[in-house]
Image (cartoon, rainbow, N blue to C red; front, side, top):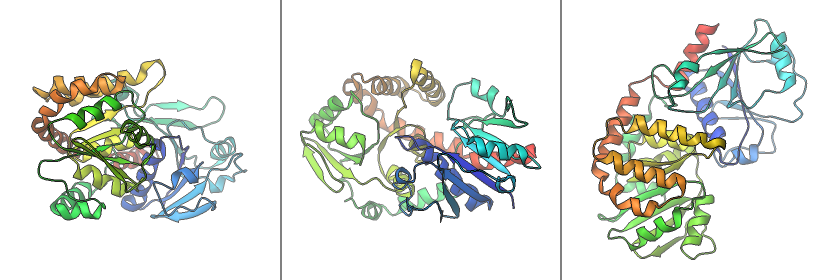
Length: 377
């Protein structure tokens, strides 16, 4: 059995480790790989994997060996280097590990797993080799994406079946999430975003609107900002506050499987970054993406590229969707754009289902990655 190592640094927004943890579980569970996940911050990893003990240097969770990425990294024997090494999101492998990779025979396959983008240049860059400037090693770039010419998207083999089984439970599913079922006229919205200048006015618009809305906010930055917007110094998981036609529920930060179920259950999902963005698409529900801001406004190009693809088959609702997403990401007047956007909910829902079905027909990222490695070696 080939051994795989995934190296990941944890940034403050969980996106990198969220993707790596899903990928590691799928490679181990569906492809039977012996897999080590090297993580530099186990304490921050624990909210996504509650079984983690931050005090241990090595432990096993869900069929994956979790290893602490110590700094400085200790000396490594070539025999301990994996057959496949994944450098997630250009995190830069330890020098001692790189030296051991160069000494290993045969040399390992080395992959730089890149960030997701719908930009067209990704198709040209996917799979390209990059020789190391000093060592006899070649790294290959692997780009997730939305077309057959890219690395695809993370998707477990039974994801659609689990989603449909969950939805069959109806009101009981809400109980399993620790929430009462919504009233027949109530819209359920999950809110997972970065701090956003557009949020206060949007919450006020929901509060003053014609329809009741319950907003479900996991613990984190958005919850602190939302609480302040509604005149509360803070909200703890389990608390709720009613303000006009809006009821805000504070939720705990949950493991990935429970977050998936929340997305499946809601009428609309606000998501951020990369991991929750992809999972919202698999939920087959309308979504709003808060893209991670980058220098030189590179994120705006990524946002426009995705909107171009996502709206290609979206008729009348495309204008309203673009207006709301752009205002949301620029901290603009999302409240003013909200009525036109949500007036299109029926078309948005149908489109979200069609979009998920089309993506499900394409190979998934883990499977494409395994096939790519087999072709390299």
